[in-house]
Length: 86
Image (cartoon, rainbow, N blue to C red; front, side, top):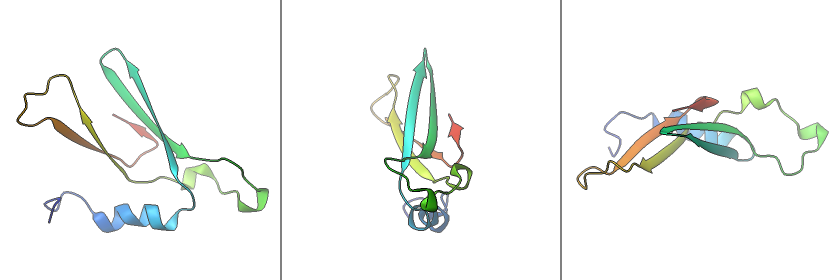
């Protein structure tokens, strides 16, 4: 109801429930351009628990505010469901 059918919550939550660990999201600003990238966060990994990073893509809802905020609609949303985006 909150997403007005624009987001498949079941698919989004599967990526958080079925993957071990957490994503590390890196945000880079180059001038007016912003790029985001996700990768599996690894602190200490044992070889028997290693899985290819390619199989670990989370659906990460991101919100952000830009300097062009007009006080009526300040918050923007973006779903990072690829390795990188924006």
